[in-house]
Length: 145
Image (cartoon, rainbow, N blue to C red; front, side, top):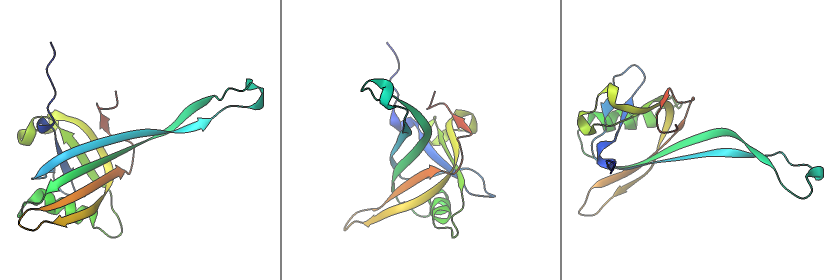
């Protein structure tokens, strides 16, 4: 029987331009979606069948964060996401939980980030939804293999 992968063992780390990698405290769910553009290669002489191929891939990540201040990781993320003009930064997903090191990375890419929403809960936490999209092809990607 195999070992079950647990989401708590994987955390997002960010590296702003000119900075060092920092983990973001208060991480909740981190989700990934991948898609490829469908290309229609069919023609009239295919006897009524559509044929196709796949084009470029897109990879997007969404992350929920319970903001815990002061947190160098969240502050670095917020600064990078709010930069004007938008500036790419490095996103890394590491195994090993909060003690993960660079050797534990399973994914690394230059991304643009956006704090899509914040919720200021009455009698609760401040929650943020963060979205990442590729600025360049991933530098390291064990997830897509």
